[in-house]
Length: 259
Image 1 (spheres, rainbow, N blue to C red):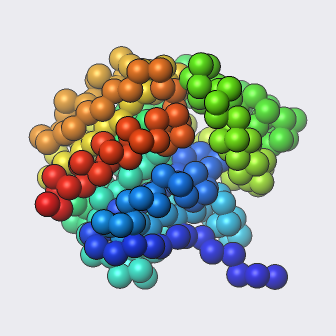
Image 2 (cartoon, rainbow, N blue to C red):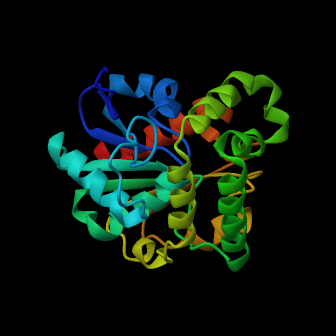
């Protein structure tokens, strides 16, 4: 059996590290990061339990994933980076910022949040765990993926939706249920934003059901130095729904940090 790679590493210069969201993999970043490789070294990691990184995983917590990211960066010789976390990847990014802030030149919460789950959201996670245990991953993906995209973008992004479903359906059931439980149990990390010594970029979709606008506004002013990008007619998947705009925002952010 071929040795499956659990990360991508291309380009040269200052380092951008990309963390995917729940039931995603490095594949969601493939087209997004290519143009950035002309200026930066770009690394994308499969988080424990997802993509090609599904064997021998014992810790699915956000903190455990943050430790994994730190170990990978050490192996890849990365001393300092801008970390970009989409959705769950942003939760991992927040845990990473809490434990390893000296490694960060900047942090981007890409449709993500430092806030914990509300009681209602925790309840929904529990119901989803039950659904997946009863009906399986494939059935879950049929209803989970499309609502991540703003309704008016879905027709033009059929290929991207199909890609997301393919990645999602390949995710082991254990990773889905353990991942849901780990997101449910993550703590409030707004304090990490308040004390951040590094700049933070927030990218929010105005039509994002997963990170509603009021929750976005609750936290984007907390860091001492933050850039905030709100996107109209955009759901939870800006790397597909607004590829050019989100990439430009990230590029600008990186240039203000790295010069």
